[in-house]
Figure 1: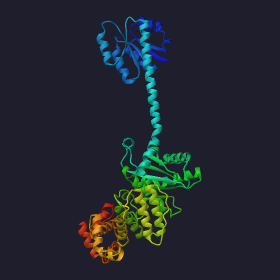
Figure 2: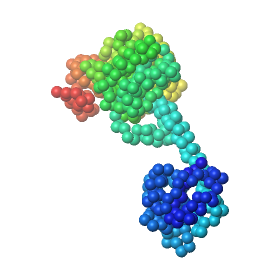
Figure 3: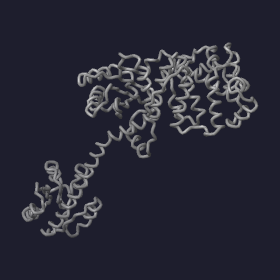
Figure 4: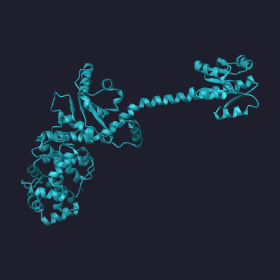
Length: 505
């Protein structure tokens, strides 16, 4: 039942209303009475009624002042105003306060009942609305973790977010600093719902629930989006997570943490993690990997594949270059061919979700061509299935196969590799590539020099020349590099180190 407080300075009228109004029939009870605004305010604090029936003109504190003060303290209380003839000034002020229910004195019981029933109807409508809003908010709150999980999954797999998801993501992260890390926790077996709950509960208890911004579950992996400031504290915390989970499941976990980055870089951060796991699989006893463990190595020494550049390749020529760059990095690290095949199988899985085992062979180009063809298929890149299209693809493959050869030029390619007329090859290449063979070769070689230096800034000039097809003394390489970049090699090394925050001396 709804509680009512009756306020009137005239005792006889107050008592008459208290006695004659059929409170029970209208679904209400009279909680108390007061003779002025001051007393009413105290009794409102005590009883917190749903409805206050108040005279508008009273001594000490009138009904208007009472309504103003109560509105500040209890905005949900309904007011019914009692007013007499000639009290229009008070009535107009009540209307300004958006009071909708009035009873004219002397009071008629039937009129009072009619007004109270109308108030009751409004209270019921408001309660239904509030109930619906609470249910809606509760439903939203239950959905939020699932929405966050889906958004994070799309971010780490580089799927395009919808407009609505971008808005939701902005709302989820508007109060967060734009510096995040990804933590991935792997298990030998697939996580079920209970396992995921247990692991997340352990993590949030150790680092705080408000520090886990989002999470996304995969079959054998759970990825968490955390604030970048936690990076330095994570190793001992993750050790505790592993220990607690082992008590629960008797299974050893393996975790990896990315470098810091922005939300827009989640895909790159996730690729870092996947490659950390992939290369870390050689270290069977280690349970925790982080990018900084390799800071003594050349930048990206284990990040052999630039996933973003591959995905952003505009055509098959750019794709070939990116795959070749990754091969050069692995060759510099002296990674064996079988291991290269494992890495490229992993690349296809990360980029395209394809579980494909690539077979190594006695020659690396049999492997690289498999990789290029698979990527080109998924990215809808292909030369025309014509005689000219097949010839152009073969030419590009043969350029990369021979790019380390200092003798490689148009004449060498025509006479010793493709066994065709030199003039015809030159015209054919220019027509299909919109540039001369010599210009293309120099551009590819200089770009390759830049990528190798970004990978290993301290590589000797003689080694650079050997990798890119220039005479081993490096003099010609230095000359060509300066001509095409405007920088000598030493300047470019300093530029690379400065961008990486290293000592450029």
